[in-house]
Each structure stands twice: as C-alpha cells, then as structure tokens.
Length: 112
Image 1 (cartoon, rainbow, N blue to C red):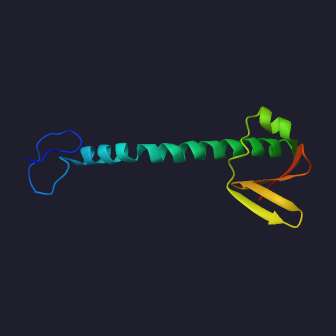
Image 2 (cartoon, rainbow, N blue to C red):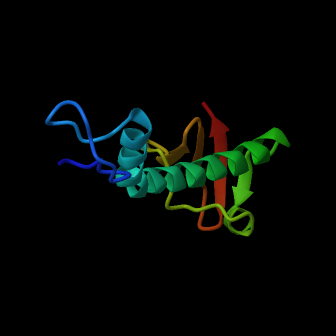
Image 3 (tube, rainbow, N blue to C red):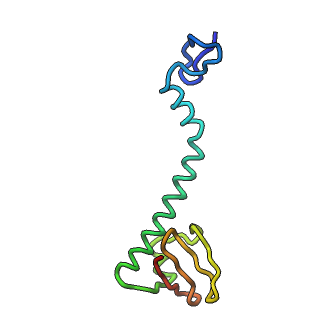
C-alpha cells in the first residue's frame, strides 16, 4: 500500500497518488525547495537594504557619498542588480539607484 510522502498515512484512490491532500503536497514541496527560496530571500534582503541606504542619502539632498559612510551603514558592495559601462566610467545599480566611483574614497549617486 502506498503512503503519503509527507505524513506517511495510507493513500486511497488512484494508484499513482503521492499525497493524501493539498496541505501535505504543499508542505512537502515547500520543504523540498526551502533552501533555494532562502538563498533568494537573503539576496533580495541585501539588495533592498543597499537600495534603502542609497535612497536615504539621496533624500537628504546629497549627490555624493564617501566609501567610509557606506561601510558604516553596512552597505554591501557585492550586491548590485546591474553594471553599465559609460564614457565616464563604470556605473553600478541597485534597482533604480546608481552609483559611480569619483575617486578611491567617494561615489556619485543618482536615481533613474
């Protein structure tokens, strides 16, 4: 006799049935994909945090920011959504906010 892959209760009905109900099917599949979902969630959280930091700087009227200030606010330079090469240099984007290196310690900010 076949048993439910999630709760291990006996199954009745079709021979190829794998779950006793939708709750068991959803729980099983959610558990199966949990690690992938957590990775994406963690990356999205870091991207949103970076975006929020840059937007907060722009909201107070600043168009440039020091690398030190970004580091103090836990900005993570590894998490960006896009890179664009322009004639003035490399532009890094975190969603709709971009930043470009002015010199070794300062960045120019702008919002698309």
